[in-house]
Image (cartoon, rainbow, N blue to C red):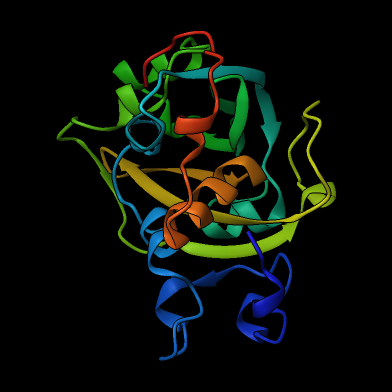
Length: 214
């Protein structure tokens, strides 16, 4: 995805989170990218549909940690709140598409929500969507940054490019959870190709990734 055309947009200064309602009237996002960044449903289902392929989850880590100061403010929790942090990559056809970080305050993990501690490489979307007691707050925040500056531990051989990130909050029986998702170059290039009418990656790649529905 060519982000150079956005280089003069102070709104999207690198790794500065901004809510979508602050976009200027002359929206700099192409319609396809905007659709992806503001899609309220399961991102993994959207990936599977876009590429017409299974999506697999690779778990980098899940452990009890203190959230960053910025995450604490976004969730509305105190600095001494213990959080469970899960970091994963979503793959399609062995290509990394999404790098994601989920932050769950300990108080959110009550009752059936404790299952979030043991899902391992199962899709998080299966748990979050379709449950009447879980809602996603409608306002996303967006950012851009370079792949070298991604604030999630990973061992992915990513090209040196800029990527888009989004974050959002869920309420699980009125208790908060946040997800930060970074759209990686393979996915961004596929979205850009779709925008200008080039063949999608699903029409080019012939390899298959391990199946793991989300």
